[in-house]
Amino acid sequence: MERILVIDDNKHVGVIIKELLEAEGYTVDTALDGAAGMELTNNFSYQLVITDVFMPQKDGLEVLLELKKNNVGMGVIVITGSGPTAAMGNMIRTASYMGADRVLTKPLDYEHLIRVVKDVLELYH
Image (cartoon, rainbow, N blue to C red):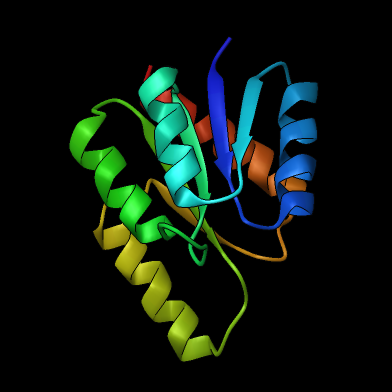
């Protein structure tokens, strides 16, 4: 089964996503910041990374750029918290332009997240 990495500095969000995806049969690892997440990608093979944008050490856009540059065939879903509508629209466009396969906003609809995960994994099979 596919291995997924969830990077989010909100431990609660990471745990919820991990539990949901494990219930779907995926192997899921978590990291609390972009630097720790990138370290895991050096040690394990992931088919998908789900990363928050605003995090300490290394933000999600930096993670996205590194992943897309160095890991052909790996899906990336970017998630971001709420903010002013214009700023949120800019973030979504920026992440999409930088190579994110999908961009989702918090609060997450977890059923939608599971569908998006399945769709993105299909893109790379």
